[in-house]
Amino acid sequence: MSLCGTRPEAAPSVVGVICDTDDISARHLAWADWGKPTSTARGQAVVDLCAYEDCHTGSLATVPIRLIASRIVRCSGHRRAYATLRYVFLHGSPWPGIPADMNTSGYISGAHRILPPRNQTVQLTCG
Image (cartoon, rainbow, N blue to C red; front, side, top):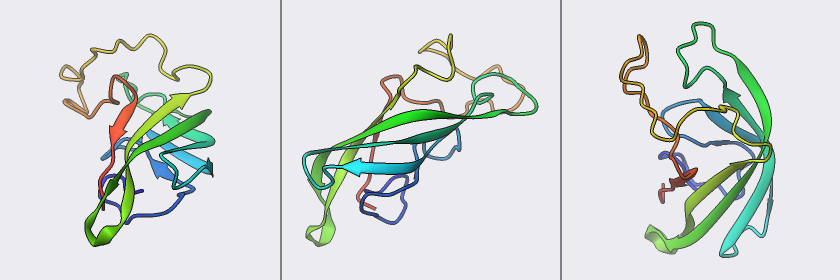
């Protein structure tokens, strides 16, 4: 698996879920069925609770997360890699009430910042 241009790694224990931000980091991942068409991991996500509000101090929380890696593709050198990663917060979103069509263009800081994908699915690269 390679995310955001990182070095490919098999069954990583830590994944930065959203590229170019530290809003969601999945840690202590335990993978099942690695190398099969779909592999799942359970772990803990460290999330920035102020990522999508105009907070000044920032606030981190740890919440349970499940990752689902799927869609194996062929990369250069005949390597195989997962191309899709979906994440699910097991107890619901840590940002309740944030609308799916939110944007940050009016923020004092962080205008036009990257937002999580609406469908909680990110595309992976071959690395």
